[in-house]
Length: 376
Image 1 (cartoon, rainbow, N blue to C red):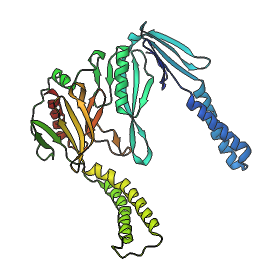
Image 2: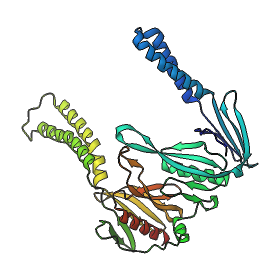
Image 3: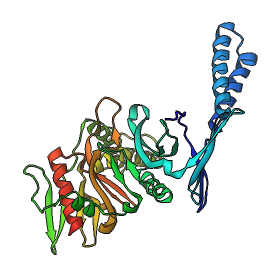
């Protein structure tokens, strides 16, 4: 098995017959610029030796790292016409070339990692790799924080290279041949012997079924107001209350001493109102809106229902829905608690996630219900 340093590559050029990936050195030049700045500070700005030495040391570390990044070469060329691959890797000028057949590629792998964003929580980073049968490590060829883009690239490269698409983002690996990428979720369920039935929601699930003209709408429970939601709602309510009192005082309805001109009072009230709504509206939507899934014959419509209105509707044609599975949520609060489970409905164009507030048994029921809608 060949050992190789795993690099993060980017698509440089693409044609009908060739894909070329290479390591970009932009970060290395930025690191070198920081090293030069620190060197200038150490020589011309910092006079105290006690501070000059640490600044010079950090600048030297940045210099070494920047030089290594700039000198690193990694290039991968996939010739689709001749079904061969080639490239080079290593530190310039002692790079090593490699070549082989595309038959050595056993799949395109999709994985996900958590990228820390500080106190606000973690976000998901989706990564694509080419799996070589005799390479211990494989290069990353695509990174994104958008799930739809990740699956689009997974299927695209799988078709181009005619190799399986390997999805390792869930609890279990999902492997599909490139010929089966357009197989629907209903067909997948039938192959596994799953026969979803039309069953009532589990008792106590707070899931409602609404029937109209023979079509059903599944309405999930609202997420509710958690501790953080309560705090944000309280923070937003204060400026809204201030704006209301200021407007009532300006109109003479309440007797509150007001200093300044009427225009200044109105402007202050408007700014306070907008500031409060920035906090209140998202919290209200997250806490009291309900996800709804409506059967529309040839498609299903997924939307948020808030105060009787449809918000953020997404229309998913049934023949394009390729996966309905229970996955870990794509958001979490730091590393302390595992992310909740939720249902993922994925089509050619969209990825919809819902049900994070549901119990595991209710998520299983929801998956079966949506598979039933797709199959009928």
